[in-house]
Image 1: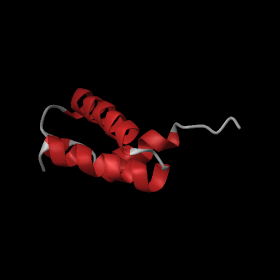
Image 2 (image 1 turned 45 degrees about the vertical axis):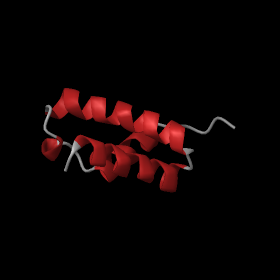
Image 3 (image 1 turned 30 degrees about the vertical axis):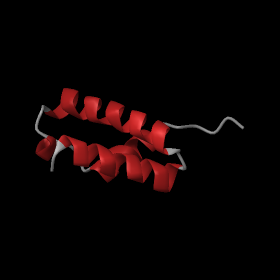
Amino acid sequence: MTRDRWMRECAQRLIDRGGLDEGTAAACAVECARNQKEMNGRNPAKWYKPEEAADEEMSYWTDDA
């Protein structure tokens, strides 16, 4: 999987499950990709699945309302 495809799939998960708008989801996916690169190297094939990375990101969110 290419890095671009990985980020698109990650962003889509953030939209579908996290309710983010496209721009925010895309920015968040870039950060998720950056984290994966730092943890697992440059090859996206060695990264977590995009859905898993998005789910992990969302697990850190809190609702302070």
